[in-house]
Length: 159
Image 1 (spheres, rainbow, N blue to C red):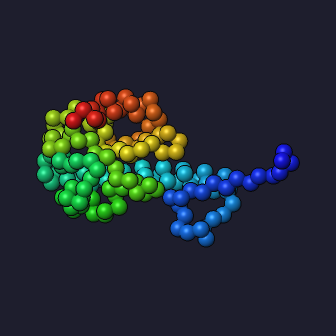
Image 2 (cartoon, rainbow, N blue to C red):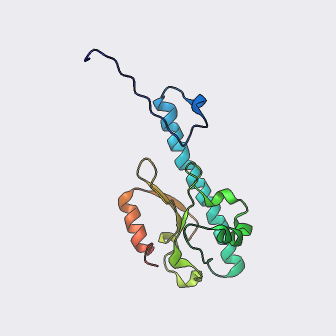
Image 3 (cartoon, rainbow, N blue to C red):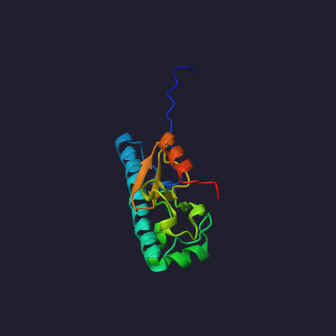
């Protein structure tokens, strides 16, 4: 009836190992957890960026990779990255996406390194932002409108 108290439980199935991990919702803890996940993804992309720069210095061009990154692509690129975990978003374990139009290209043939995305999160985060690694090695977390501009400028989906 109208006097019945109803408690609502939210379960984040990605973050529990078993039903023994259930706990009451704590807004501060859970919000901090989301912020930390976004920060971890940016750090991981920065590490991936160092790896891609080492690859380019050693080989003179960008790797040819297809999405999602398969075993062969990871094996080829692994010596320059050094850790298999850098290919995936820490919180979702989804593989970062590679801008396939860059495959095999020399850096000299690509204008605007600071605004050309090379790797990016497959899906936006809970706050609708998406982290992207740019050719100059920096990482930005972008809201939807700036992401669409970067996507167009980087020709993501055009290859």
